[in-house]
Image (tube, rainbow, N blue to C red; front, side):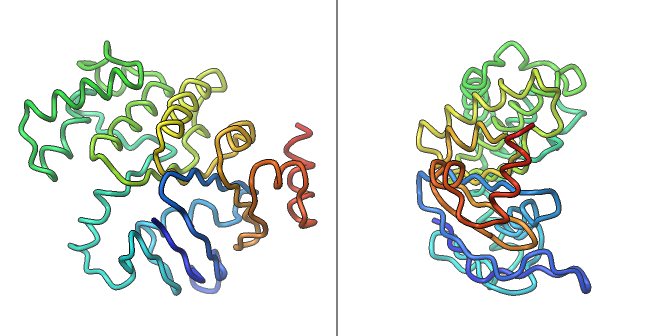
Length: 243
């Protein structure tokens, strides 16, 4: 579904991605872990060209994203749902309107269709009772579950998660991870940047460890967590798993 070839991203003289490559198969859950500043979020944001790569190639369902116009790219982005660290919900709209907006504007769904789908998605994330609430009336965990529902409202082929729990209080993390776990079990293709090692171990098909602008090591959760091969991976895991 996604093929990344030798992706490079520079900010002036600062090399943030240095020849990153990887494949994401349909139905796979890829979890990207690593120290802050290693390039994880930049990689994720390059996958739908929210960040403009400096070089390399990104193929999505066979289409080279680097060759597309902005209009063509907007079409592709409807198939690539994005869930941000800080929710990015519209505070002036109700929860229901946040969910209906893109399907009506972009996919030209009728109000009735968009409402029916939004109701089903709210039930799916366990927040049916919040349909008429405004964003500032929600907890952080509820906001993030609504953000996931909003991404799902476009029926994407892949969901990209940029540290979806890092802005949450610890007691709210579990409710968001539960929704993500359910999506994984339903076969949703997902690329998740996270610091949640338990989630990576339980849900990922493949874990990518990123540090120093590169993917240092890839493997199944068992391979990477229990038998890391690279000294940099071993060092990182020794620190985070000891906490």
